Length: 469
Image 1 (cartoon, rainbow, N blue to C red):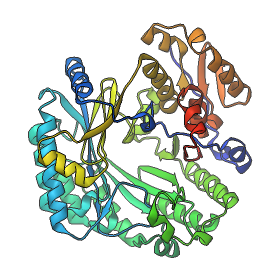
Image 2 (cartoon, rainbow, N blue to C red):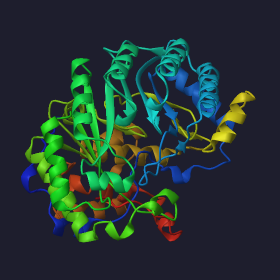
Image 3 (cartoon, helix red, strand yellow):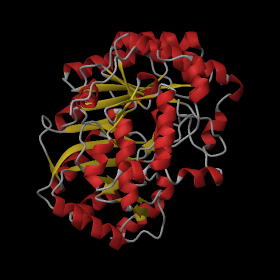
């Protein structure tokens, strides 16, 4: 079946009235079920059983490596990180991480290729050249990394911790994708969030990345920060467009100082009011799309020639805890504190405490402390949600064939709500296929929420989620 997607009409997608009508709070669906369903009754046997099924499948692997340390505190940050100047603390963690790599690699068939690896944090590039090299080669000794020409190896970078020579080292190791944390180019905003870095610094790093022939460069931007205005963010976006990165992530800043203490250091009175924040989002998004970037979904933009945009057009885009990825059929192995794995039909997570993580691994114990075994219903609903998020369509016949169900019976109540989205112009229905319209792509999380059977209970319990826009 050939699916024809609607023309984007990108220059008129974003407007504040539409956003005001549809901007509800909901999960980001980096997984389904979400991490809220993880529980501590999850056992090592659950993990081992899933690994056995995973090895039998002979699927490729994807690795996520968490390096949590930073040299200084960015006040807006909600990541699992540790601020330290202690080389001893960094070294102890690195030793524990390497030990986990050695232990966990034994669980998996050595012949299974790794086609994707991502190092996140924290600030991975806070580690020295020698330590980064050591970690790469330890992973390569214990997992079957395919050649960089065939794989996707990415790393998150704080531009203040790197120069052109270190970029060359990373490329020499095998990294072919980098993500630069920009956030904003405005000096006043940078000072307020305690992250000062110049435009010239970013420009020079980007040029070095191109000289080293990195396959893709991503910029992380944030809207809703103190002192941001429509005009100031427009100037930042103009500079970004001039630099022309391959991908752009435009994240919504969620101010939750009661959960993340560092956010209380921000001047709350300088945060843009809700109406202006909406206008910043509209203006910045339209500016990017008018410059030729494609809206992938969920805060992400890419050039039409980028692999993300091509994969979405071909129906092969996937989503996991690393975000959007072009490698769909791979089990994800998380390494390091708080990292999450997706192995066969389980999600499992390492402890979020660095002290506990190090202690467990040093004693040759598993650092896993929570997870969930997916039911058949979970797998069906996950397939529906990921199809909507990644491909912008839902093909009931495909779900029926994959799981042996009658879609109209299984989702009888959801179909009524789907038709309401059709009437609202967020979905189109042709030949039994639901296509997410250009307007619908902006609020696709809202459509996905229809299929989340756990969401009503989370809402009842007062769980807080980010806005879908």
